[in-house]
Length: 254
Image 1 (cartoon, rainbow, N blue to C red):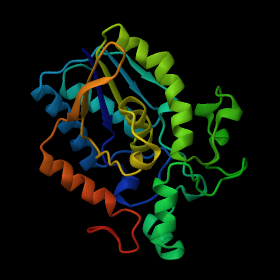
Image 2: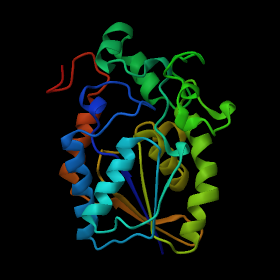
Image 3: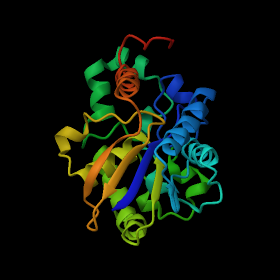
Image 4: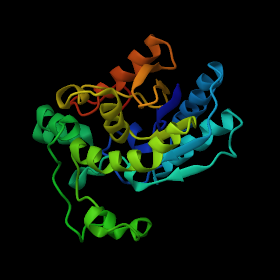
């Protein structure tokens, strides 16, 4: 068996404020930091260890990885960072309130932007400060590869080649792999390794800070998989996320 664990970063400042975040580099909230440490504790409980870690180049994922590893006393592990593991780029929606956009355009339209498989959000042009070409951390990336706004299908197209080239070979060498990334980049990976259809993957929720553990065969097909938390906690987290993008603000949000 090959061990793979994926963790969506803990709650970010813009998660809490119910804003479209995408590639904007926001930090974790104190609650998000606690979620990350809790994830490390859950992995300790099932006596898992790792050999290598992959994450995006966004601080909410990087800091979650640090906190998970700190909780597990594994801060010495190598961490590989790539923009290909970034969240979906939400184009012209980035920084806008999901609730306000639902009031303006309707919940159905916002849901299409958030969760359809192949519909892109409104795009940003190259001069927009939200375009990755304006950000020096992507200066060595081919400008043609940098998005102006992505669908989940686009995220699959940029992530899976990195999986094939960089992550899968580690698993095939029986390295235990931890990936800390984002809701949509991890959804892209789940679609690939679990063989989920285009229609079904948009319904899948990945709660923040909840490790999903896979035991894979030599062909990297899942033999067993599931969250390392009790079902009630998972259901509660999922319900909170479903409320995002509705015209009535989620409880505790304004």
